[in-house]
Length: 309
Image 1 (cartoon, rainbow, N blue to C red):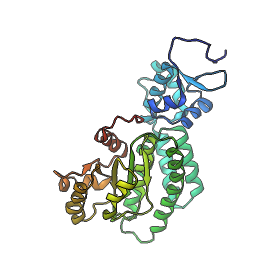
Image 2 (cartoon, rainbow, N blue to C red):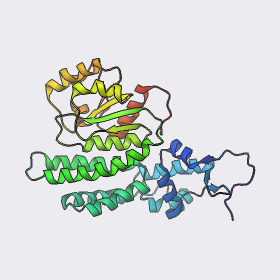
Image 3 (cartoon, rainbow, N blue to C red):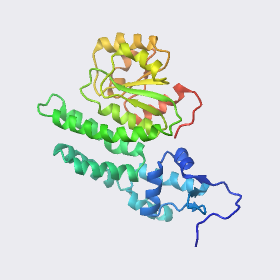
């Protein structure tokens, strides 16, 4: 039976770009779900372009619900087609647990080839938000606990940062070609030893439709007003995996927020640890959960530019 769309139809059909915007699932993942697992079956135009009905979008949302509950993508089809039989069954979370253990071992042994396979596999099959929430953010938290004050851990940190920086740079470059969302500068506070939190934040923000500027090293606070002007920024988001100095948090950041004519936000463990110190300031606290942080940032901008959910 052909899935080619007929010449006329009353039901609205959506191209893959619009479905990606509506659901938050990128086009590469939608194609993988179709080709590898048969999870969705879009119609085709005579020229082969995919078109999705409202029922397809609802199915994608159900897929996301199962994935966010920890179900491996390979098991989702059975759950979709026979929901009654599985409603009360125990949800398998072994997929994320296995991926986490493999990623931790890959970093410990500096097996960058294995890390590359995990990176490509997860981003191809799962939403970016799920990858960050279930794998990469927990991994960074665990690694930073292991690295804290331990000698000989710099090599692991720098290799992992280099790994993500290379792949994220390519992703941000291609995303910038079609980006229509607000423009963010995502940077690291100067007291942090690394940039892992910042890179995860940049990855999530890009996936949400923001145009992201990511710098290799922290920019001095004195240069941020100029960056705001020259890069035409809609917001500046700073992150850190540690508490940072009291003077920076209590004096420098609030003073910087008053100088800028654009929102200044703080993300990562520093936003949770230092929340009492910044109460009453103009610094916007986004918390240390990256997907939730972007949910909190969105209404702050309030410029009506469409973003992925």
